Image (cartoon, rainbow, N blue to C red; front, side, top):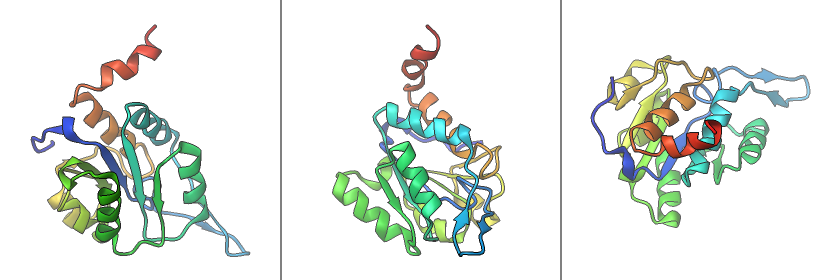
Length: 173
């Protein structure tokens, strides 16, 4: 169940990666490179979000070439990895974009996400988030991280802000 919020003013979606866009696992190869699994439902959801004219910011504590490449594939405006203190980084983006924090939605799963979750207009916790994150989130997903939770949040915001029907026109011709 979500706390009642005005979702029509949301302009930017912030997302964590490990545990949100992925299930939290990664493969460490012998050469030190890594591999991650991203969910295609989340990917298409992010494309829908951007098609609605909205912006995306990835804020991840881990430096990750797979994350950078996925963000590039999806045309995500901001991809900040190796970002341990996420709130100041988000505030820098908001200043650059001239967006206030109440116009931001954020999806997180773990304690480093709490400062943002507590300071944005709409926050969501994936189903497998830690209890403290769920306690402060406006919306708790039915889906776990890496299993379409970001898509769930995107659809929730788009449908409850009057943006969904226009996006569906191309699919319902």
